[in-house]
Length: 119
Image 1 (cartoon, rainbow, N blue to C red):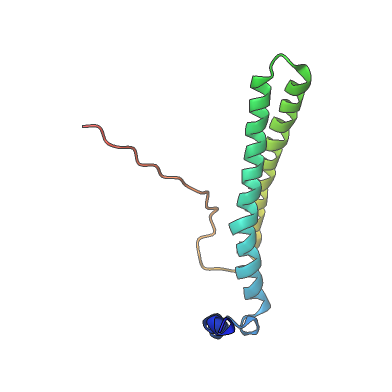
Image 2: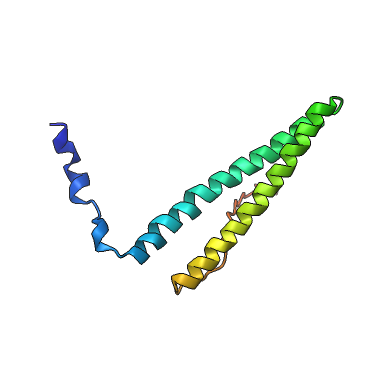
């Protein structure tokens, strides 16, 4: 009975042989890099930067902790810069090798927060 519950997943599964290598790389690999890996590393770099700022401010009297905070700030900024460069390189490679007709601008995540209107 348990195996029968998986029949819809098997019957609707995509056959990997039906797409070519170019489409597989464009959709699966680049999609994974742009959709999961780059944002995860952005978050880690930002957290390292914030942690360094926290240590730098909270332990201003302790020179060793303050130096550790400086290192976290530095490596967080380096990580943010490198990931922005990787995002640009991935967009450039995608535009060069996959000749897509879509707009190849780099999309930066946008968090639209609508503030309540005051009367």
